[in-house]
Amino acid sequence: RSYVLDCDSGVQIRLSPLAHRVLTARWSGASFDEIARACSDAGRRLTADEVRLVHERVRSQVDAAEQRRTRWGRHGACLRVRLLPPALVGRLADRLTFFFAPAVAVAAVVFASCAGACFLLSHPLAGPQRPVDLAAGYGLFLLTCLAHEFGHAAAGRRFGVRAGWIGLTFYLVFPAFYSD
Image (tube, rainbow, N blue to C red):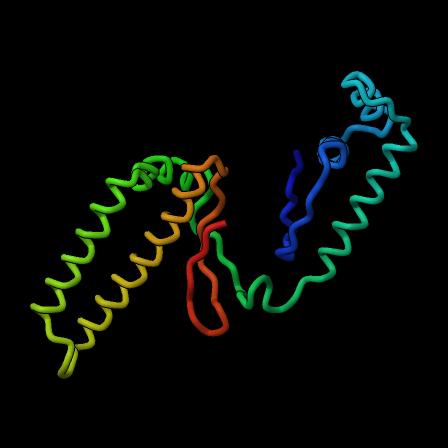
């Protein structure tokens, strides 16, 4: 069993249960002696000095990860803006997990394919487009992208992953949504 610490720089650090316990206890204001006693009560005999060493080792990893912050962040994205908090994303994603039942997934793909084909046959793409049509199309595209991120969140919830933020970023120069 391990834990993952997400740093503000976008770097992730895998923590052992002991490292996680020490780090969260220190963030809560516990002393090294208190943490050593708590670990001893849980069956792992540690001294306050050993706890201090574990804490220093983890803090040095976190500090090094924070110094690796780049202008473009993770995967070339910059200017990340969090839009929807994990609690809301989790509640909405829980309601969407039924899409991962095989019969529902097949029905959704068939419906989307038929709807897309009907739209393309009834609305030719050639010819001049009005600005209002382009704006409406771009708005629909952005809503589709947001729905796509909820698909990621729902897939995670379906398989036991805690929901994270959904936000907006810029990938190179293109706006994009992301799901943590």
